[in-house]
Amino acid sequence: MSLFKRLVTSLRSGSVSANEWDQIRSNLISSDLGVKLVDEVIEKVKSAKPDDAKAAITQVVSNWLSDKNRNLPEKCARVNTVLVVGVNGTGKTTSVAKLANRLKSDGNSVLLAAADTFRAAATDQLQTWANRIGIEVVTGEVNSDPASVAFSAISKATELKINYLIVDTAGRLHTKQNLMDELGKVTRVVEKHSPIDEVLLVIDATTGQNGINQALTFIEAVNVTGLVITKLDGSAKGGIALAIEKMTSVPIKFIGTGEAISDLAPFDPGSYIASLFD
Image (cartoon, rainbow, N blue to C red; front, side, top):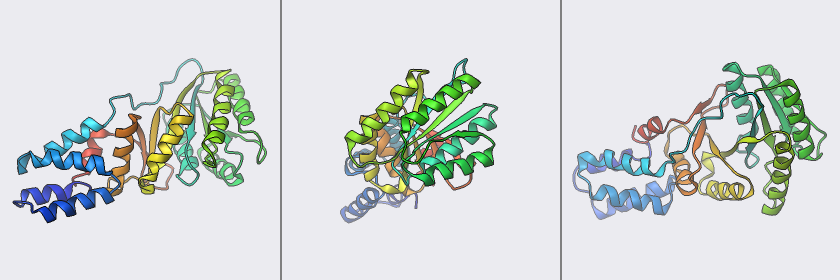
């Protein structure tokens, strides 16, 4: 059942007992929305008429969402550089490929940088996707310096006048300091040649409240400008997406809904909120 459907159904069916409120609250919390946000919703709907419950919840959720721009930077005279960060296993490398496919389909030239050099599988995966899409990947040796791959990639993108460079970074969370050092070095190397226009953080919607901890760690390490939420299908598991945007004010820009190369879509707040009731 979708995130708020049971709540609205219960309100419209008549009076809600204290036990039912407890069950509703427990269900919403288990949907990764978080205690504070759940209580905010319940407080709002308790003061609304049953027929107005959906509108009341919609208003609350709309207020949680950021009003920042959800679009990628438009093509310009220089290279647009997109850094993609996130924990290994969230679908980061696949999201890089999906984003590259979207940009190429829109008529842009795209170059990829396999800067997750600590996992040979990540480079192989990105190369496989790139071959299917028909774009090039700049790679390095296993365990080589990610910044050196980023340097080669931005140099090549500038020389070839590529529209978009997408950099797949390492997703190790061994320590915050090492994460900051690695991402900081990659950022500095790229920015010597061209500004970094976008830093997208990939979060797996099924990771639960741990997704918030991941988000806060990466936001501390690098200037995250947007979120990509994977495995988000409008179900109750999507509660974490709302919680992260509410807490960080970083806008969700894309959602991944499947494994196919085309399964990446711009985040539409109106459609997403509607899906929470259906």
